[in-house]
Length: 260
Image (cartoon, rainbow, N blue to C red):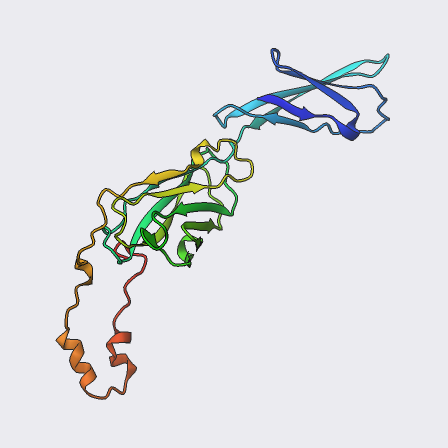
C-alpha cells in the first residue's frame, strides 16, 4: 500500500510520506480542544494482489508537557478495482450465409478479484464494410433476459448492460448479424468502455474477430422451402377454433437458441 493524499483542508494536519519506511506523518500546529476529535482522511493505494488482511498501525503523540502515546492496529482488506475485458468473441453461429441472420457472441468479464463493476457497462461492436455492404443489424435490439440493450449508428453498435458484474464473473452479449456477402473476409471488433475506479484499461480492447469460414453467397441450406401437405389441408375449409390454427397451435422457435 502507498500513500496518495490526505490531511489537507479543515483538519489542519499536514501529511508527508516516506516510501522507504512506509510511514505517513501528519502534523498539526494548532491546539486540539478538550474532548474534541478530528478525522484525518487518508487516501491509500493498494497494489497487493491478495485480499488477505493487511495490518495498518496508527499512533498519536503530543500533549505538550504531559506527553502521551497511544497505538491502534486495524486489519483491513485490499479489494482490487474492477477490471473489465472482452474475454472472447465467438465465431458466427451457424456459418455465415449472405442475407441470412446469424449470431456472434461477445463475452464480457470482470477479471478483478472481488470488486464489482457497477452498471451501466457499455460495449461497442464495430461491423465490417460500409453498412450497405459487409454486414447489417437492426437499428435497435435488446436481450432482456441477458440485460443488454443495443442501438446501432452506422457501423457502430452500442450495447449497455444494466447489472453489476462481480469479480471473476462473465456475461454474454449476443449480436444478430446479417452478412451481405460482398466482403470476402469481414472483421468484427469489440471493446468495453472503462468504468469508475477501473485502473487497468489495457484489457478493455478493442479485440477483433475474423470468421474462420468466409461468407457463403450461395443458397442457404437452412432456408430451403418445403411444402407441408399436413398444414396445407387445414386451410382448405373454414376453421372456427383458433386452437386448430397451426400458426398458434405450434410452438414458436426460441429466438435465443444457437440457430437463432
